[in-house]
Length: 198
Image (cartoon, rainbow, N blue to C red; front, side, top):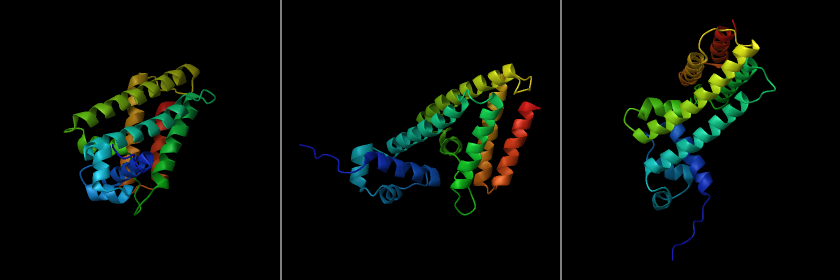
């Protein structure tokens, strides 16, 4: 008879997610995961099968958490479309400046994974593609609404604008990893909003 698990699987998954986020997939060793989760190697492999399986579960958890909070902002109809985007940018700036290590922000696990793994990891690429489609759909809807209510004045196609906003956010996260401070990130957000609102 198998022994029941005696640890918090969600807590272990969160610890692994933070480790992958900080170090990247390739640079994270099994020992790093043991240290972060407090689990032995056998417990990690019995529960999560492999480092890659643990990574996929951690990435999925991150995507669900981040995208859900961003979608909540974009779906808040109490705010104009432009105000929702301004709030979204403020969330990004706050997240990047709240978790600095050595003067650098953590970036975004999805952006980090795109840079590190997408070209050679089809499972990660598929997860990130689905997440990107979901975020672009939400951004496009907000931008279309803003074009109708007048808070977004750019006449460009809402789909193209959604890709622009998504790229600006990714750029902010990468800039933060490179050491950009709050003022620099806020400036990027302001310029992006200026391009949308004229």
